[in-house]
Amino acid sequence: MSNLFSGIARFRGQRSPNSPGPNEQQQQGPPPLPSQFEGGQPSGNVSVSLPPLPNSPSLAETIGMDQSSGVMPTAEEILASYHLPPVKPMWLNANYAKHIVKGNFLTLSAKPKTVETGEWVAHQVVDHWRMLITFIRLVHDKEEDGSSICNPRRCPKMSAGANHSFTWLNSRLQPVEIAAYEYLTLVQRYISSKIDDSTIFPTDPAGVSYADNPAFCAPMPESGQEWVGKRSGFPQNFMEICQTIFRQMFRVYAHLYWSHFEDMFSLNLEKSMNSCFSHFILTATTLNLLKKADLEPMQPLIDLWAALGTFPQGSKAFETANLQVGQLLVQKAGVTS
Image (cartoon, rainbow, N blue to C red; front, side):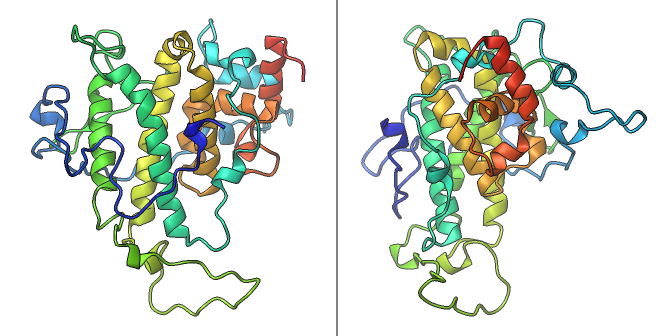
């Protein structure tokens, strides 16, 4: 199995993958962004405050029976409602939606019985960030001539196709569109600052707690207000922070698929990214780190993977998919099971 799926343990005291170690100097990154994109904070690993996004129904939820006629839409009609471009993206061809390993990724996402929920969520956040940062650096890091695959000319805004674009908050907490390169810079800074903050992700090994195994003992009674991770020292808003991190990571994946999948294909990395992203979706849905509405930019790929068996039946990822659409996409690609 690839080292991307080696189940990297989250050891207390580790730093995020793109921050310097105690004896290392931080490499010089891209030029500092204008203050309007810094959230009024000094440059460096600063925390960018993000307010919760408004709730809205997902595309999958809004597609159902026609109330006037009582007729269910066909797979072709549902696929048309996704408003995909006339030339479908390469990653929607089932021949390019394959993985580097075979197996049930749900086993990597499901929490072991004796692991405390906060510890497991923290492990998943760090683990998925380590996998994603590899692909970010491929398109974001500059070559010797100063060029990068993702650049303001090629990606003038952070988008996932023509129907979805993502904004960042300026110093006045107003949403503004920025180039994808700048967005990726801010995402790396934001997530690293959260993971490296010991008040959010505790680093004291003495604080680790374990969940009670109901097969051997009765759960200990809790006192006072409860929240995920309380027993291990995680803050009360820990899950909210992790959901924001996962939402930002999803947006990066969506941009990579819509704008840079062919780059990954030319580097022979499309199967690696497929493996990481399908694992990410299973984890996000299993642990309630993303809502259905958040998944909308990649809904067609989720449908396809459900039809291909990437998402096992009974998983929350499978339940968010439209199996009819996925089977239609498989048929169009001429793939036989």
